[in-house]
Length: 260
Image (cartoon, rainbow, N blue to C red; front, side, top):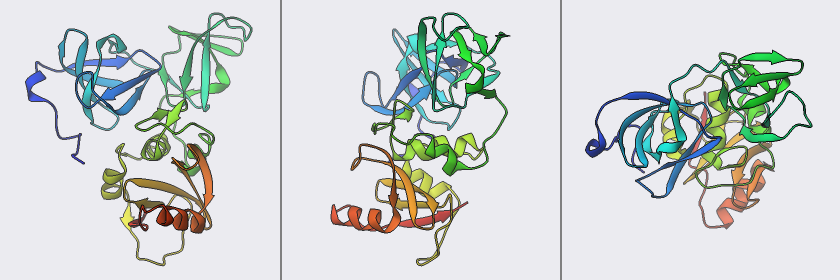
């Protein structure tokens, strides 16, 4: 896999314009109108490197990835004040849980709070329950606990949201929420995150286990959490059982055990 942090498309380069994602979830494409590489969430910062008709070539500032998005998904640069801390939330038409919901937002979506009314915070997209928001500069402290919020989330290749996520997307969401830089692909995570441990090292919470094309996060010395195609969801599994099952599927042994 090429490192998409290092490969902007020079044919599209016309300058650099800061912008933000203005839709709940947006596919970051490998090429114009091509397959999904990853996803971007509401309020995430991007830089527009070039645009042709309905397609923009952008760099995602959270991880430096380059790719293509529908230009309609981009809005002007802004300064979010809060982020969604619940697994998912809704923006309502009024500060009332019985009012129409306008859109759904995933964990880590970023918004600017304009005002507070009772238990709701007003944003340009609607009113969001205050208990689902945290200040933009606040950090989580336990990546595994963040990953557990995604339990039951459907598996989605290249997904990065509560509505669909894959193995490396789950790890990225967990580590970015705790302030740890993290790429979005498992091979890059295996190269960038922490240090390799020798075979037989006891497992500790927040260790990472890698297979060819797969990654899981350790919860306890005997359990892990991962987005996987076996369950087609984010699920908790015994470490020994997962290692045996993955090997029996023909996907090989654990290739790395790493720790921050």
